[in-house]
Length: 610
Image (cartoon, rainbow, N blue to C red):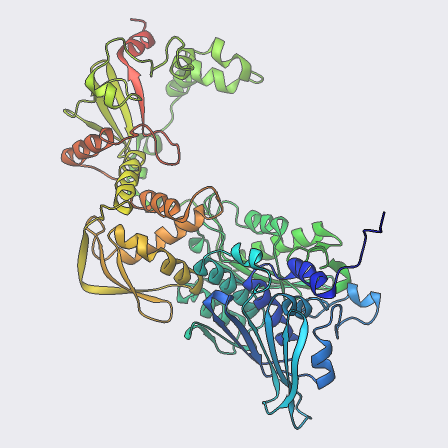
């Protein structure tokens, strides 16, 4: 039997190794930009075509390379940043420790132009499939330009797994922002397919944050600054009112390197405890400086996950620094009853809690059920509330409110999940949130927001399948300016949004003109509707089981539905109930929340002992 183990050829070994470093175009962008920063550049330009699949080019005015260095840079494990094993644990630079350029040369066609200030001519090198095809002197300005063309041209399987151009461009924007935010003293520009996406002048950290995240943050940033012998923290957090339903605007940097840390994010969330809603996320851009020997950045190939020598100290420091910053700027949780004057006039607030009322309250079974210790497993047997269990029996068991009737009506055949036909006379709205709808054998308690969400979802689903919603043309078209990442996202959604009644046109520099909206979006609220839709869309983005179109439908339905607390006229309630029970699935939203609960008359009689 011949021997079967053999060494891989260098070009194949490089392609395998490249999989760790270059997973998509954004990975190459990150590595090339970080190398430009390490080269001491104060001007860095990023140019991409076809979302980086056709071209990724980074041009800098850094110190440049000699002819020998330029050639050596593409060898595996070649680096200027590590000379001994100790250097690996005290790293202050950005690049990939000798793997990045070799990996890029293994999966793309690379052209390098570089010149040092002291050299008369620069060097031009062309590499393909890890092989040098051309090397010659060239006249270029001081600095380096690296262009990577046709990513994964020699690994077609990898290329086929890339996402759509819009999705890949969003990843590139994310990586660009992470590097650009770390170094506000450097000029950055970014253009895609000949159009400028970012033009970031040198300035302060606050100016850079506003340049990237938008002018809406200009007056809503709270500075964070604490210094100790062990570590320093500085940066900005957004005021509580800037909190969003998505995690997008959250940046942690350790020694100027972007990191992802659920542990430190938890520290920030704790600092904002009781200031923002539980399902909201604050904006922050926080920089932690500490001795490189106290942190291990080599636990993950992309260096985005790191380990601290003492995590608990860092956690406590981050949390206390943010709390201190918010307290300094008088941002503390308060109960402000002035927001709703009607609260002050309620009996519970305006009238004293007399001894008689105390006695009545404390003698009730409900009070006893929830005030005696160790009673949780006795609640059903000791409480007068046990008959509520009947409403939650499994299908087919006694007391189930959704048990099918023997005599199946035409309405039930159309809506098998609904027991009785609703009556639209004498509808009652409770707490501006619920609608009581009488039926032949009881009543439905309809949640108006969930009901409207179901109606809108089915309407939108029909629209994208070929029955577009009518567009109301704007007499005076409004413009909306978005953050770059959101602008890329909106461009991706435009075709489907046109079917849903939104007529939007790109106007350059992350701005869109709103030429028309659906008829039910009131004039003047178009920008808010679109911004909220994007936030909601990003809220669904982590759920991979939904398609892009499905996320859009759910986002719009959730965002445009009538909110709890909205008073409805009789006519509006009738329309809502009729539309709900004409839906294919009237009993739940697309996300599985019930639109109504059913109460039978016989169960009501049973509650009152009749």
